[in-house]
Length: 288
Image (cartoon, rainbow, N blue to C red; front, side):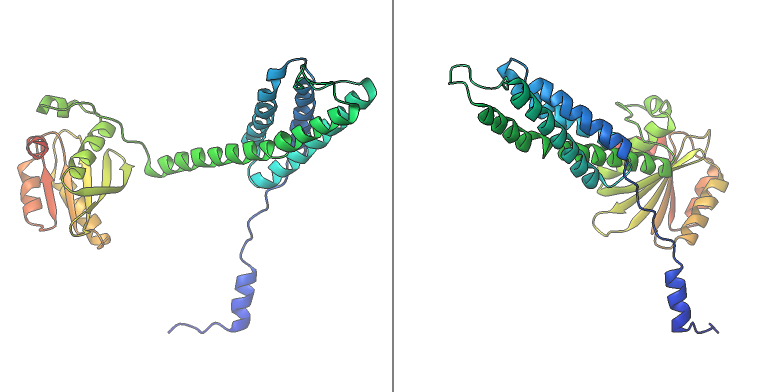
């Protein structure tokens, strides 16, 4: 009989759960990226070329991409702080250049009257608001999301133990027998997909690949085990049958091999209604 747990104990257990560590802000990278972006942006804006307006947007995004690849989290917070540092830096430098050295932004139209210092400063401030405020944060968030997607793919591949590979064209039993295990598993997955199955997941395990498939008409779950061992043995059939017993959600198990199947393995499969073995010749017939 289970021992009741008091409300006080439940509260203690709840409070004792470990909390996820908060990702610290990388202030060093923030200052480096913000200051450099502000300085380079000003150099571009005050260059005597009108086409630099295009670089005015590229530079902040580039800085954001650099920062986004360095951080481990809190991308939006990093991006906003980065934008503010870069904007303030550019505003200070721009003020000194405009009011101290009477510098003019290179994007001004030379055919128009020369703006006053206040006009030049307003031009710089407007460009800062249009580029340095939104673009660094955007670049940081997008780069971080890209990093997270890449890491998720790597984690998923690691959990599967490998990756399926494109097999190329298979028209004969010799082509089938020459496939490596990742290519054979991919070919089998495509074969079952063409026969109204949907691949839900797969996993490499020692010298086999387990394909987890769902049958479209009945939503039945099938476990298809791919192997390229020299010949299919009765013990492998028994192992698959045991896996099905341990996981009753799977309706049927199939072992596929491009090679021959031992007679003992066929008899072992026939004695179990939810297990089937398929050799290379049968697979090619299924493929049409």
